[in-house]
Image (cartoon, one colour):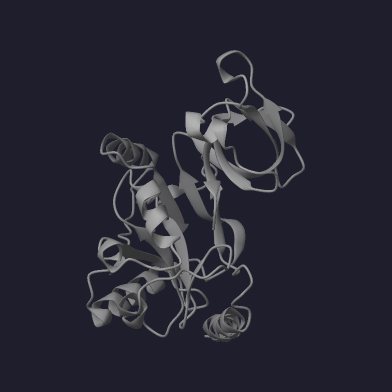
Length: 279
C-alpha cells in the first residue's frame, strides 16, 4: 500500500511538472539497448514502431524536444485529460511520410486522417507497467476514435521465442522490438526498465563540422564530423543521398546514425547516417 501511495504522489508531481514546463524537453523514459542482460520473461514485449514520438500533457501535444506539434483541433480534442506517451505512426517503413506530416506548422486534415497516436505509456500514472497497459486500453476504449490506439504488449516464454518474434517482425518490414519490465513503476531517464532490440543499433550526435568530398563527391559533402553526448568525435561518411550531400545538415544539427557495435575506444563501428532529428 505504501509503495502504491508513493507512486501515486510521484504521479501527481510529474503531472504538475508536465504542464508547468511545457516549453522544456519533457522528462520521459528512454530505452537502453538489449544485450541479453535481463530475464525476458519479466518483460512485456511490443513492436518498435518507426514513428515520431509524441507526448501529450493533457492539454498540448509535443515532440520529445518539447516543441509543439501542430495537430488539427479534432485530433487533440479527442484525447483524454491524462498525460500520454506514444508514437505518431502511419505504418511500417513510413517514417519520412509521417515526419513530414506532423512537422508542418499548418496541419493538413487529409494527411492527419492517416496518422494514429499509438500509446505505450502513461507518464506519472501509479501502479505497475502491466496495470498501466490495462489503463491505456480503457482510455482508448473510452475515447472511441480510430486515431488513438494502444500498442499491443505480450509476454514471451524464453529468449528463443523473443528471437523468433524479432525475425517475424523484420520479415514483415518492421524495425524491431521493445521490452518494458512488467512490474516497473513509472520512471524517467534511460533505464533497463525499457530496452530496444534491433538488428542495427542507433544513436544521436551533434554535427560539429563538414569534410569536403573527393572524386564523384567533389564540391559537396564528403563526411560529417559529429560529437556524441559522451564527447566522442568521429566522421560519418555514408548513408547520405545526393540531395543531402549537396545540402548537408548544418553545424549544430542533431543527427541519428546507425551502427553495428562499439569499438574498444567507444566509437561506433560501421556507422551510417540515418536522418536529421528535426524535433
